[in-house]
Length: 254
Image: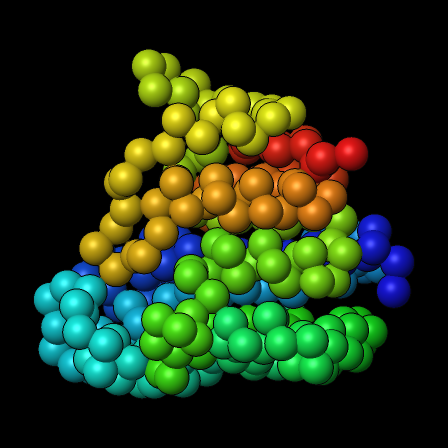
């Protein structure tokens, strides 16, 4: 498959969940509609979706992100089924099927495993009416098996597939400079903006802007153009995929 065909879109927890951690059905529906409606039907989209732990939190009657591993894994196990059920129902209205893929670090680091994952994803995206949806396998992944977070997972998947573009959808418009309120629209060197990162993140999220910039660096070093954009504004997605749009765009390394 030509690398120009593949777009990886990572959807953050802050985009998919409400303040109390429950799935935001309206936001998810708008996102699915925008993804299904991308104008170039030769493009193949792979989603990396957060939200499983957050989606499972209400079932366990928790008021915040679980701090212990067994509770976090339990929330992920419950939430992943809810999340995929929501995706399946929404994409079905566009005559699109979804495929669930849960990964651990070993699946990307061991040569034989990595090749199997690559072969699987390439087979799935060869079908025009299938969208693979990837998440870290939080219900079994502990520290030694963890990729880190879904920002880095999406960067590694984009690299694996030779994607043209990686879009990190978050709850902000893009990267803000430390003393400004206008986002940086284009970045040529990621190292120059690493200091812009803040530790701010939602109660049910793992990564913040620092996490995203580390993932951006991985992706652009692998030659993948990367964008940080507002997932609450899916109306901007088509323009972003086309090379414009209101977001922060990071140019790939030569």
